[in-house]
Image: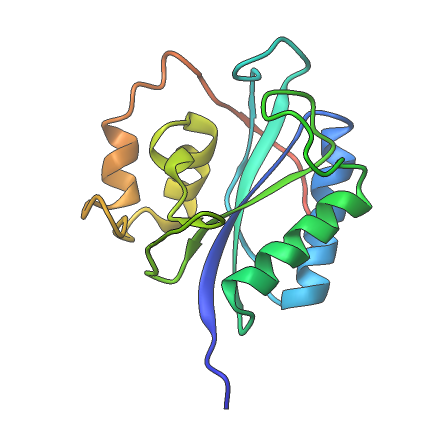
Length: 167
């Protein structure tokens, strides 16, 4: 019997973001079953000028290894118009980033788990703290809620968005 691992994935879009977030959730639920979701937040882009992003975090259980999971997330992005190798700081139809894979810590050429963005960006840490506030960061040894309470949110404020989501 294959064991399941709890994973957390950041979801973001600034190109028809409501449509792309909803579509991503339908696809993720179709692949992985029950999703646990943070609130949705609006924020200004970081690193470039453009339309606001909608961001959130989804958690689910999977029996896929990291490589297969990241490949699946990449296929979902591509199915929604995300160009492979697109610029890091630019408009996105859909951005799916694996943040946490259980309590695994991996730093190799292809994988970075947990992702550094968790402690660098409000639009990642805020939704993650919503969903897993009591959970400990595998490297920091502090909860995501504590990290969020200490974070300087003034530089990149988040605005909660009332976006009904169906999964």
